[in-house]
Image (cartoon, rainbow, N blue to C red; front, side):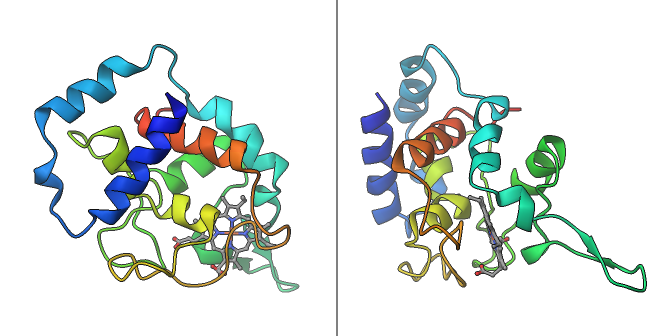
Length: 164
Ligand code: HEC
């Protein structure tokens, strides 16, 4: 199952220039019925903590006490803030319309994944696609990327609807 999600993602990434409306009702139905246990954010949050995303992506204070926003304005200082800052939020770096984590209703799981900038940043291929136009480094920038099994779990979470 997980393997097919990844394959679906790669397929959807290749098809990105097509409009979202090209997803058939059959695809959506398949995504709904295929999974029995949904991955929710509480399950993936420890993976973000493990890779210290929250250590960098947190607001700080200047010596004068002014609040300095987190890198790329992505606040992962708590699980609730991270969820709010990731899901359904336009990416600062990528092209308009590309959200950090896409949870658009009516999209198939594979399409939600294909339109989620976070996935590209974790895989390090965010600069490869003209229709994404990503910038900056792979995340996390310090350890040359997350373990693939962790990325897979995050992809599964997005595919399952990116629920809390
Ligand atoms: C060492 C500090 C550091 C760590 C650790 C880190 N980040 Fe980042 N992150 C940054 C900086 C700085 C930027 C902006 C520059 C860049 O993209 O290279 C950024 C940008 C991003 C963006 C782009 C946001 C947008 O709206 O376009 C995402 C998504 C992101 N980080 C997610 C993560 C995740 C998820 C993790 C953990 C796996 C993580 N980061 C770990 C410093 C960090």
